[in-house]
Amino acid sequence: MSQYQRLLLIINPSLRHSQAISHAAALAKASGASLHIAALVKSLDMLSLLAEGDREKARAGHLQDHREWLKEQAENLRDRGIEVTAEVSWADDMQQDILDHVAEMQPDLLIKQVQHESALKRAFFTPLDWRLLRHCPVPVYLIAGGGHALPRKVVAAVDASNSKPQDNELNERIIKQASDLALQCEAELHLLYACDISAAYLGDMGGGGLTLSELTRQLREDLKKSFLRLAGRYGVPSDRRHFIQGHPVSVLSEFANEHHVDVIVMGRVQSHGLDKLLGSTTEHILYQVPCSILAV
Image (cartoon, rainbow, N blue to C red):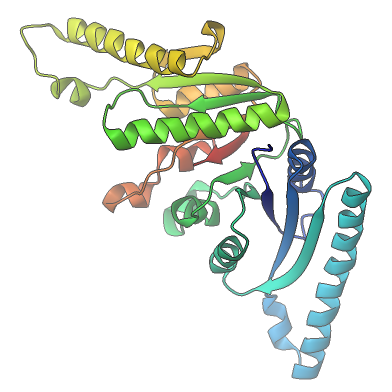
């Protein structure tokens, strides 16, 4: 049985050279899933300058142009044997409209092109992609600009530093999503743990008469054993297990570039206080890696 039954793709129809449709279509074709494409159009502020009758005519013409284009795209996908439906509609509240589509469709994945925002803009406004990562109830597959339409190398980014039940559950969900995606796409599945040993982290262990270097080595060995047990439990081959010390954003970015990764599968956690303002590791990874992100 296919790992995916229903896929929901959200697009901006003004970006007609976006790779999102080809990526979503490739996954739908490989998995046999149905694909619904929702082209959401932001209201045009310039139309408010027109008289009411002219405004409605301009709105209708604008939507009709997008509908004709999307109809052609959908027909091309059906010719390839993909079950696809499509719609074009105005979106006054982009986040809420997307979440409403998710609630109505209950898709296995929400697929969307990454929308890059500058650091200055992120300092004042929370990007739409970040808000979807925080509030969408289903896994979010954010497509990068390039790469293979059908992933060839999938990396599950796990955290072996905690033994709490909820942390183990999240690792399992990450690995399952990564495994499902790799299985459908006949891609390589890799497991990666970015081990960030900070002085504050070491302080939680207690000194026990050990020097800082000894504490660091002991902790690193314990974390590596934990990671290898996790990899062994899921049967990940030894050459596809990657234990790398360093900050997660830097480690994942360098690994994705060096190993030509197509998709990184990561967990997303609820942010609070200052963390919510600054964004999570998963959120910042969006702007650092050249590959797509699947967040669970």
